[in-house]
Length: 313
Image (cartoon, rainbow, N blue to C red; front, side):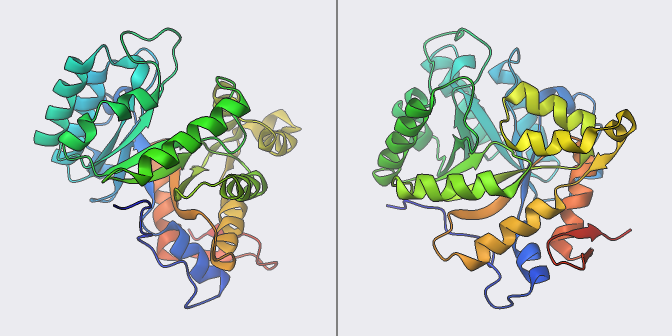
């Protein structure tokens, strides 16, 4: 029974240059959209390359059916949908099974991200991701790649001990499941806390590979707003130091140095748990995929110190 996702991208060991490491890290990245964004996008093919894996993010106040509708549309337009299954937004087993039937039959979904979901009180019977996993319905409907949430800087919703216990439970569940499990982490603005977190959970027994969250290019004001709403911790202080002048809030910031550092870590540490990048579309999907495709294609210029790069054009 598979216990980990086999990396789909070359870690860059064959060519140890910083450029090769960066392109290997970004190749095969995933990104995301929401049902609200879908209502404003006429055609996703104008925003991303076909066959890109696109997570359908759950937002408090949206219905499970909206997630399903967006996944169906993404498949029809040539993408690989990976919907969030938010326990607190699903009423009961019947609604869950009805949604999974559509996801399988209409959207060809094989990969999901199972989360508790925010938004206060649950709408029905479920309140945790573990409860969804325990229904057995994901196996029944052919979901064989399952993501779970990771929090490099913690989360304001759950205490550190509870987070650690949940990750241990998910590792144990993955070990006896026929599905391949992985972690999709919350975004940070600095590589250091991500690296420290990977090492800490690995020492604690984590064996699930990590799709590490990268904040896509966006205005500093937008990044700060998302950071506050998501409870991002210490790495937000690094971002805040860039906003000493009001005018800088309108500056677009890209995670180039963070990506370079994570690519180096991934290539240099054979036990690194990071296997690929998940790019949050904080500045819009088109801006996000234009940047990510350029980096994956090698259309960038390395900085003189080798610790960063700038995207060409």
